[in-house]
Length: 341
Ligand SMILES: [Zn+2]
Image 1 (cartoon, rainbow, N blue to C red):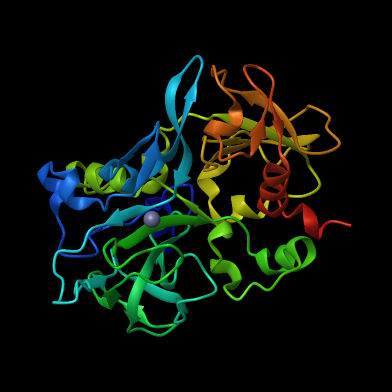
Image 2: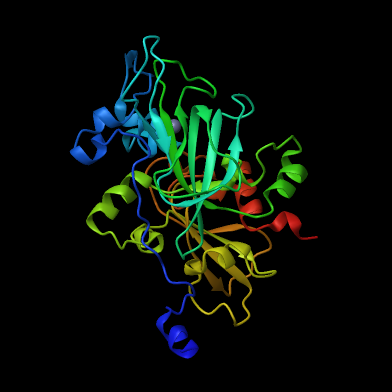
C-alpha cells in the first residue's frame, strides 16, 4: 500500500493542490471586464498634465512614466500587487469593505501598527499548495482581526479595508493585495549585517517577498481550476540571468524544487539563476562558467536603459548590463551569500 502511494505522487514531491483562489473583497469587477471599477486610480503628473489612471493600480510596471528616445513612453516603477477599490463607504468616506483571505492558509504575520511600513497595517497568510510556501499579503487595513498562527479556511475574514501606510489619502482607500514567494529564511540576518537598521517585520518585510502577477493568476485559474503556480510561471520569459559561484546548494531551491533545472547532483563551478524583469526566479541551472562574484550572464536586449525595466537592479543598455548596488543587495540575500565567510 505504501509503495502504491509513493508511485502515485509526482516525482517533484508533494502533489499540487488546486489553489482555490477567491477575491479578497466584494469587488468582482475584474471578472466582469470592468477594470476601471476594480482598480484604485493613482494620481499622475506627466508632461504638464494631471490625471488619475486606474491602470496604475494594476500589478506590474505601471507607474512613473518616462519618455525614452527609442521605446516611446514607458512606465518604469514596479507595483508588486493590486490596488482594489472599495465598494462601500460610510458618511465620512471611510471604506467599509471586509477583507478576506484568498485561499486557505495560516496567518504568519500581523502588523497591527499604521507606522513603520509603507504597507500600514498588514497581514500575511501562508498557503501550502504542494509546490512550496506562498504568501498572500493584505495592506493598508484599518483593522486587523486575526492573530499569528491562526489557521483559516479560504474566504475567512482578516480585517477591514483602510488607508493606513505612507501617502494614501482617505479618498484613495484601497486594499493592496500581493501573492509572493519568499526569497530567504535568513532575511533578518542580512538586514542586520547590511542595512543595519531595525527590521520589525522579520521574514515578512516586503523586500523579502517576491510578488507574482496575481490578477493574471486569478483570471487564468478561472479557466483552469487545476492550475499550479509552477505551471503559471512556466509561461514567463527571463529578462536577465545571474551566475554566482557555487559554494553550496541554494536554499530557494529547497523551498521551490520546481526551480531546479539540469542535474544539481553533479559538481559545477557556478549556478545560473534566471529572473523575470521584476525579479521572479524562473530557474536555477548548474553552470561551468567560472565567476568570482555575481555576474550577469544574459540580458534581454531592450532599446532603453535596463534600469527602467528591472526596478533599477540592472544598469547598462542593450547587450551591456551589470548589477547595480540594489541588484547586488537583492542577489546577496536571495543567494544567502551574506552568510558565507
Ligand atoms: Zn498598491
